Image (tube, rainbow, N blue to C red; front, side, top):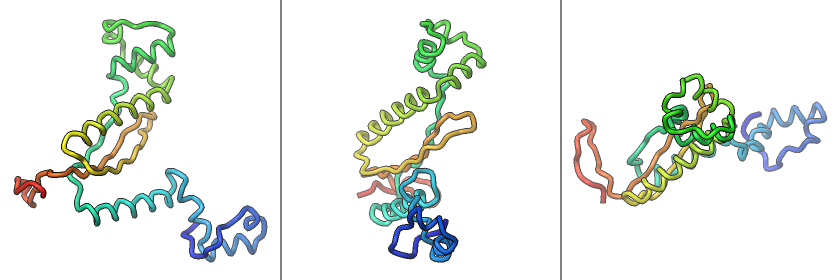
Length: 175
């Protein structure tokens, strides 16, 4: 469905008749109803507009980075998954000696716990960045890899961040 041009929001009754469906397609009214549903094109269109407005208002962001989930390399996560999945309390030495297949099995068996743990780590990191130099605002997007592991793309505006010229050498701090 394409972008909304009319003021009337479409209803289920509009889909029941051929003329209602034709009106939805002709007047592009079916697009707007998905603007609040995450991971839909209208949702990201709204987010993109908000991000561009922030760039116009605040200027260029100081930081852009990607955080990836090292789910098979976090001993504390693997211990928690061992308690949940295998009903076993793994020692530090046992976790260190787990094969990649066993680590992968634990991570794949409970993706919700992995995502919640990653979100916790991201929030801790964001609080640290925000407190570090007075970050004023941020935008982020979470995505998932093929095996289900999350990663995050983030943009931060930081007060008094250095400004770099086109040759990537330090010029002066922001005011």
